[in-house]
Image (cartoon, rainbow, N blue to C red; front, side, top):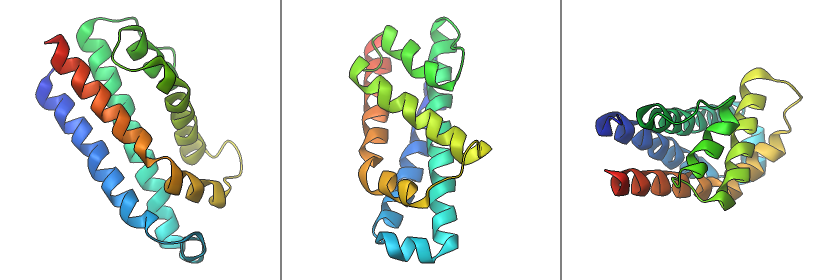
Length: 141
């Protein structure tokens, strides 16, 4: 069973992190590149926001008894299979999970300009995720 209080808290965590990221997105690329602390804040904000999305998705999956995802990216596939997310958003969300893995595990050298581009161009992806998941769970209750 989905715990609506837990789900709301996770989705609120996404919102709070994205609000902080939006504030940082107010700085231009050069200002962010010149300030290591701001850049680290951006990276940490992305990690926390993506992990909160994954946690929210896993909570819904477990609560509904859906099949277990094989990895973080597949969380979004399973949610889409059950109508909680649009299939059109799944590739972006899988990429988001991969981006989180790069930031956390350092599988490859992180291009700080790419991080800043994501900051300036992709924050609405989090809003769509939050809205879709919240709407679908309320619909299912």
